[in-house]
Image (cartoon, rainbow, N blue to C red; front, side, top):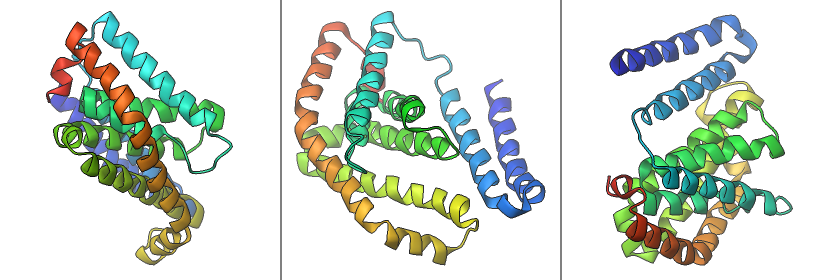
Length: 230
């Protein structure tokens, strides 16, 4: 059943790319990219099938998502300087790739009910989800070295900005070309630097205190012990 589901999503992605160009000639790349991002999210969340969480684990995951959403809301007055990526990295690093992906993706979805939903939401969900997943996959290394953690945080800030530049290219510029994307990357350079620096600063402030609490809960209650070891 799961193989059929994956095959369906792959075919859906191809159909989205072709159909977007045919049905929406003026915004073909935009609609195709949106449908592809949505398909990638569905495929990613399908990996949660069969993931059995205890009540305490579900409550902890809900609290972490809520904290991440609140952290974005609290810093609404400071553009491009948000703790969301840092919170996502911490969750992935200590609780595993699945928790990291879920925290990042759900933070984007829920917080955008305050910041505004739109075609950018799937891109934000996918990007923060990828950041959380990669942080979980590299969790063992990141917990051993703060230098690697800060480097990872800075690179995640760059990744987020580059991915959103892709959204700007296909939705605002209405085309897909390397030159347009590079122009957008150059224009967004101050924001990219801000993303990267804010990630490093928030990781320096939050990774230690939050990490200790998560480790304590893992040791005491065994929360996400398997996920963290993946």
